[in-house]
Amino acid sequence: MFAVHEISSELSVLHIPEICTWNISLESTLLDLPLYNCQIELTQQAKEVAKAFEENSMLPGVILTDRGNFVGILSRRLFFERVNRRYGLEMFFKRPIEVLYRFSKQDVFVLPGNKLIVEAAQESLYRSAELVYEPVVVEVAPGSYKLLDVHQLMVAQGRIHQLTNKLLQKQTQAKLIQTEKMASLGKIVAGVAHEIRNPLNCIWGNLTFLLSYFENLLQLMSAYEEEYSEISPRINALKEEIEFDFLQEDLPVTLEGMKLGATQLLKIVNGLHHFSHMDETKPVDTDIHESIEITLLILKNRFKNSIEVVKNYGELPLVRGYSGQLSQVFLNLLVNAIDALTEHAADREIQAQPPDNWQPQIEITTKVVETAEGKWAAIGIADNGPGVSLQNQQHIFDTFFTTKPAGKGSGMGLAISHQIVTEKHGGQLKLRSHPGENTKFEILLPIVSKT
Image (cartoon, rainbow, N blue to C red; front, side, top):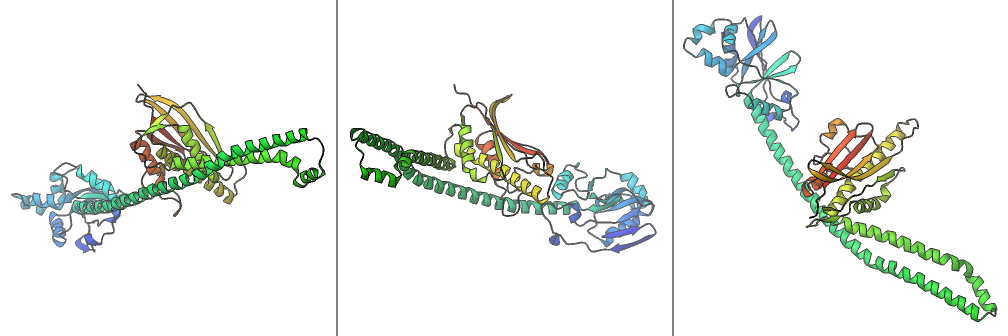
């Protein structure tokens, strides 16, 4: 790097890093690139510029100042193009550089130092053909400028392109692994659910018969007592020993409780079987409310900290889609809401916030909406947690993006949900969040009228 001062034409040479030593990342800015600082006052002669270019063959241009204030630049290409013209030496070489600058003045392309390299490269290429190879002026601080060789900018952009390709390959591989894991898990869950459902159906069905048999036995006992009214001491003793009166009242209740438990367990198993249909090949008519209820049933043990679920179900027709994948979407959105509320409640306890009326709540709403594009089944899943920051909202559906601590989130859930809704069902997945107040995801699924 060079510095040329008004009081002296002597140049001080600083080390310029080689291209191979640049530490470039996807978030690198112009300040991460080698910048050149060679300042020439307009009153200095053009031969000072020639000397600067001679002593540093990499210098793309010089910064021109008027009493220390930035006025423009003069590139190496333009300088030698003007000087090497006929009578160029006589016209410019021994005169103040201001003469050459006024004669060749061009628009200056200035970018802030915090500009991302990829954005700067794109903006640089949008310049006119005669300026596209001119150096870029970088404002490193207010009123302080340096030069960037456009060739080095393009090299850096090329390296970032390579890094992006490698990252995309890793993300694609990770997504394939995740998809394979989900498919394998779905098959395992489907198999386990099937194996459980068979004996469970046997238990649930036999409980009905068992209750009927018990009622028949009680009728038989009653008939015996009516026909043989003489009291037997042995039978009375046995009744007292087994507490027959209590057994007669409690056994039907016990059997009904077992039947209720078996029914609930059967719902869970059927839900797991329904949820495991991630490899569906054909869309089917899906009951959205049933899918939501199945998902809530599977997540029942996650509703801690007194999380209240409010359901505002409207009338929805059957939606053509992949039921298992839609259940996956509902699961991801509900898990995110549960995690947000749980963490928010824990933070409130740690911060010892004064008691108020806040209670963790998830609200699920369904309704039919009409737009210019047609009718949609709208499903809203909202929580009254801390919300999502405006910065994170821009990346919320990006693959591998997560706001959760390491080990608690893969950054795949919302990205997969967005893909399922938009690509597999032709719908929309929107986020509306007020930081510090709430978060709401809205799913819009097209309703196809049957003719």
